[in-house]
Image (cartoon, rainbow, N blue to C red; front, side):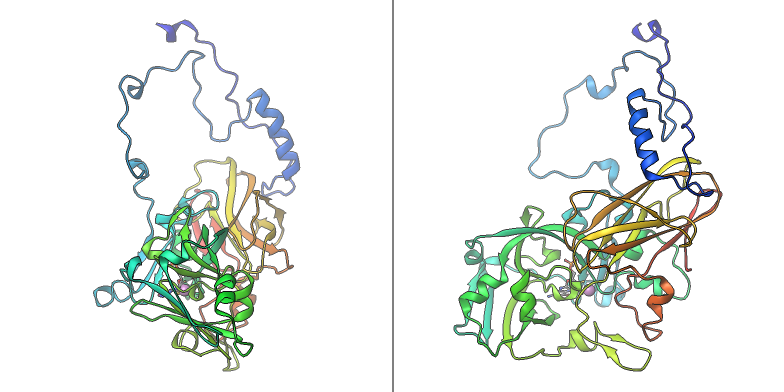
Length: 438
Ligand SMILES: Nc1nc2c(c(=O)[nH]1)N[C@H]1C(S)=C(S)[C@@H](COP(=O)(O)O)O[C@H]1N2
Ligand SMILES: [Mo]
């Protein structure tokens, strides 16, 4: 047999070469690490996950090579081996209103920056309406020269544009405002954020056709769902980068994301990206709808409330390691996570192993898009001791992600929106990960 012939050992598997450590907790100087690992790659002498020693012989012939594979299909599905990757559904009103609530993206189970469409988070105020595109229209009226009604077919004829951006619910990460830190996966806490490539028609083009009256400084956007979700949007945003989105990651919008038409306001609180959009009315001022008074305003310590806090703050979270994972063994690991800002591009992400006392700069994965999820990574040698992992994002406008204490201090005690504060994951000597408040 071939396998018995060459029993020579591959030179691949050896303990990781010691690497200079900038701190006693095992934080590696990134440049040193990267230079060395590049050199070692050629010599194939680095073992991140201690692969088993193998004989220097051709691999055996697995069953998959002995038979033809299964046929093609019209629409691909994830591997059956990956079935547990699913949204985390929370329906707080149960059977009374099963479509009201949220289903979060399992960000801890994903890589890269684009959220698969079937895993984009869902947030509905009265379920997902079933809308026949042939019967649906988008009306632009109010303070315009000429009210216009666009069929979906008409919208699809316009020149389109594509852009990548995140959508984040203002209520994302509100679990971390509870008294005790919830011991649930990162996606269950921070998964009301997702990132897609959206395609559609710039709202500015349609407004130009309707002709905005100079008195029209705001617009009301209303959805055709059972919640009649509606928000007031300043005209400046509508003319800047607002999109009438028709496609998501190359295919038509998913019903959960607003099929057949949604408003997309990049970087602004998800609530304003009105789904199942059927009406835009130009107005002189904001309408103070139920969705922007009873909700999506933030009570302050002095009894006043902030209203129209449109932009989502600069934020990051380490997705690996995080709660539910276990460090297999001391040695080389990659810390990986997501950063984003409603103000533009992410400029820098720092990682701390000691609960924010010292910081090391992570590597940002290119390309970095404005108002989009950005992947950061940091190679790290865990020595088996307890650490407190944090990440802190800084955006191109110089905004810095706040600590939990400084974020909380801005608001009345029960305030839960716009929580962009720093997340701490503690890793214990047994490799278990827990959520801690610092
Ligand atoms: N018509 C309508 N639009 C809506 C909502 C809704 O319930 N109805 N939910 C809003 C909220 S609160 C958020 S966070 C985003 C969520 O978008 P997604 O479900 O595509 O992730 O849609 C917004 N647009
Ligand atoms: Mo939301």
